Image (cartoon, rainbow, N blue to C red; front, side, top):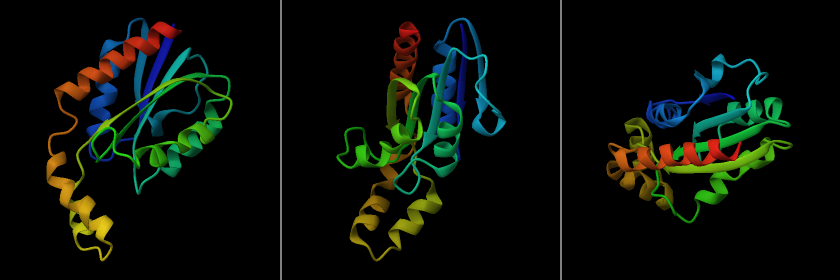
Length: 164
């Protein structure tokens, strides 16, 4: 079985999760930035990872999913700046399912990542109280994903690979 772990990472946090997943996989495997992937031919399983940006799946990831995942076994992993279980996260992360129409989605994993300082600064200057509140949460994201979250990503990788 040949597996690809591909990801979009702006600050390196999603890449950490990708590397944790990759490290747990057995068999033939590759780890590539999403920009390096031309198509998914030859892969039996593909993990696709990305950060949540502006409360949604990044457009480049939606395009990648819609263009490449039909009839493919895929698993999704995401990082975001809020704690897992945050109520609004499902509305932010759910659009990957629409983009990956026709794919066999085997599972999804999400975990808190570190909010970049320029984003924190921008949010703190916002006139919107909700945006300001997100900015105030920024310092609590420092160092995320931590080792416990990376361990959960590894367990996710094993669980998904066992399904194929």
